[in-house]
Image (cartoon, rainbow, N blue to C red; front, side):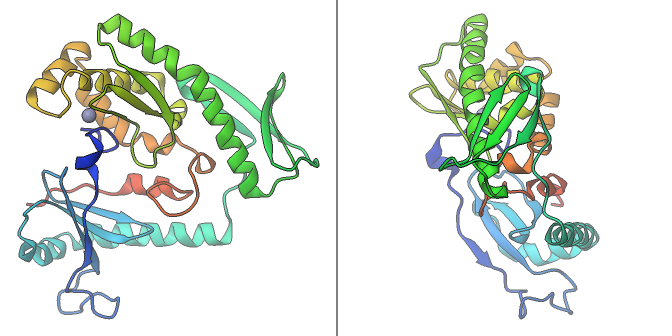
Length: 287
Ligand SMILES: [Zn+2]
């Protein structure tokens, strides 16, 4: 289900990315007229997906045991889409190089319907600090752009620890689906997950998405306390608690666009300041 969500950790691990054999000196093979790509085998994938990311370029994600000999033709067939995705991402890369995104003047926490303006103050604190004042959020400590962003992330974490546990407890009680523990984390690619011990790990970035979607994430994970898989039985249970789950699930996949760049830890990973690009990853099933 939501690609950002929850199977037990063991099954989630990504597998080998190996260079494809149409990679000729990092350039498309003129004979194949396709782009270079990486193949990633995924235990979770049920179908082939094409994904274009800033970090990796074109990724072909295949289910375990997929016959990779079929990939060149598949990529070739999708050439038009790939060229478009590549051009978009390249344009965005140049934009970012010329003009890194600015620190926010205001923060919208859609999940809890709060909006805060942000002011930045110079100061002599040893570490940048973001705190809430009656006027909004004040970031002090003479921070650099990155330090200020980190301070805002710590502030977000505090907000999440205050807002999300009582909410999950309430949904759990309403639905009669008990869980053992909640952990607030800042996962890079998942909104939440549920462990065999019924610990629900919730992404603090959920604060940025609409409440309806947060509610769905909670229901989804609470259903995993009963069915720790994505079997038809699991979905039946989800449907009982949220009949509109298909639409919500789809929306959730695109909900990373609500997360501002500064809320994502820098460095490699699916989510950095360019993460929104990944929403454009067309997910095709050309086979
Ligand atoms: Zn799930």
